[in-house]
Amino acid sequence: MFRLSAAENRTASSLEQMPFFGKSGLPRRDQSRSCAYPDSEKVLSMWKLVGGIFLGWGLGSNDSANVFGTGVAASLIRYRTAVILTSIFVIIGAMLEGYKSMGIVGDMSKMSHTGAFIATLAAGICMAGFSYLSLPVSASQAIMGAVLGVGMVSGIPDFSPLIKVVLCWVLTPIGGMVLTTALYPIIGKALERVLLNPAKRTVFIRLGVLFAGCYGAYSLGANNVANVTGVYVGSGLLTPMEAALIGSLSIAFGVLTYSRKVMETVGKKIVELDGFSAFVSTLSASLTVHFFTQLGVPVSTSQATVGGVAGIGFVKGTRTIRKRTLIEIGIGWISTPISTGLLSYLMMRIYIAFSLTGA
Image (cartoon, rainbow, N blue to C red; front, top):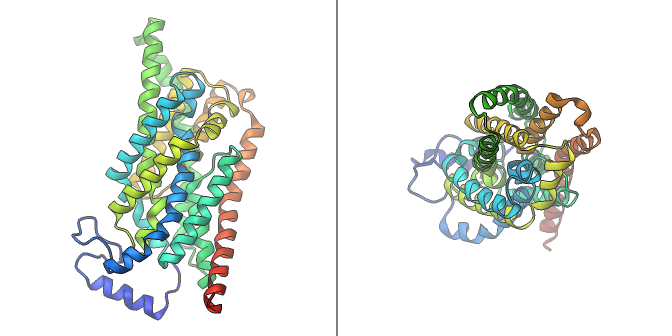
């Protein structure tokens, strides 16, 4: 995506000639070697994973609300149970399907180890800030903005690979909303015909929320782990499998330690949800995110979930939607790539300035 120096071009050419690397320079999934770089350089560069781990923590603390936030708000599952299940299925999803979205992030972020560190650190700082403000935001937008910021330092980046990603970003909340408005009446009528006993219907809804939440956590791990450590695959520091493991563990840590505030925003402040609404909106968002995983594009689980919850509001009547909260979330979505881009740009400039002065 960015112009490479002569040394970097020679490195890329040598990688292509190695049997366990593809033309993109990314390690193949079935390779026997662990990394594109010598073991000594890999060990010395491992500290730069701190940025990705911090971003993973921020993603977990923010985006876990998209999984069980509606169920917790509807009192169908306890918060403690929700975060434990989310952590488990995030790791499973990342390990089984996380590699599918690694390619596009790695291809868009051919940068040095230092560039990858600065990009993930900047994205992580912004994600943590939005979590503190209780606003659900997009980790995809955060890391893409940061990658562009780093790239602007070395030259004008090629924006053409972003077309597919941005298109998917636009379609994500629309997909969540459309699925919700379609599934809500279909599943509702089916339940009324099949489960005539209200008690049995309640049990079904509770189990449905549990299933949808676990599926949502799986989709979160499969799709969004690329946002956390995909840049390190692009730099050659990690293989896709190593990136999936480290990224998913950091996401799980964020889920377990700092996810309650954003979960309350998603579950209560957009529109009041009953149990059935929580089930349908979570299922719709999970299906949407998993669909884009198969396309190999990391998207915003926040946007899918907010789209699903807003879809419930449209089904019940737009008066039930708290428009002010939606506007605040929208502002967060717009400001996310801008803030991460500016921060990573400044951090990269500062790093280069100190390097030139020998500090």
